[in-house]
Length: 271
Image (cartoon, rainbow, N blue to C red; front, side, top):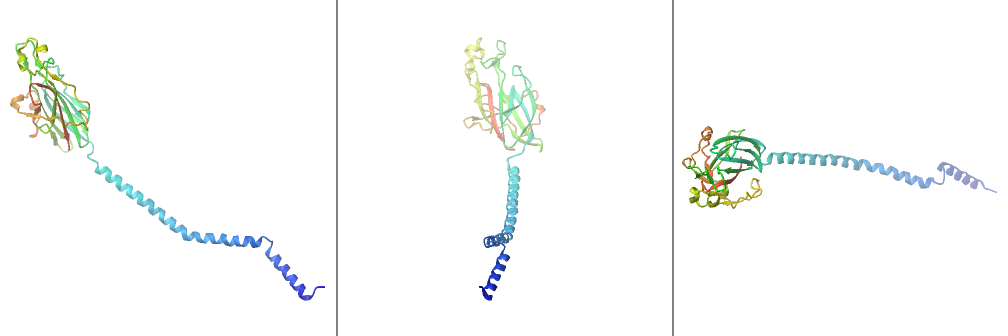
């Protein structure tokens, strides 16, 4: 038989069991406690992450913006328009950085083709100017008026000036700083000038133009300096006086005004 004390203890235990709900409560209660602790840590870390991200993005964007702007402004020269004025005895072709931008409008086959040309082109500083200049000859003998009383050795010459249209400044002019290569020379024996068979008796030196000679990166270090010739030596006419030549512009050619029939010329322009 139970004593009053035992009965009281049993009732207390039953009430405690009912209050806990079930046997899983001891297991889930600690979990609930851990789950509550995790959100508490979030407010401590989230502000740091949110604050750091915008700073990082802003720094990269600002740096990129400055670099791109300064890089574009610092590049050598923007594209501008230039005008080349050229007088040649007798014919020329003008290249800029490897591209043909203009040539003499009068064919080389035309005798006494003395004329001036004005050619507009666009380029970025610096740029390379290359010119193929030819004196008129009838055959590879290097002579003209063959079979006529005035059969002779001809002579050449060219003068060039290039103007920046945005400033009106002459940025390049033909002079002794240009380099030259003669690729057609004849006659090497000038006494053949009176020959009745100049094509067989006149000697010459003829080579092909070097590959890539009009390109900016071509190595012309082995070429000779262009020779400056006086007006009295070249006797420029028919178009020469139509151009207001800058004082720096000079008549140039290869080393021999008569024997050099085709001359390649180059210079680099820093406007």
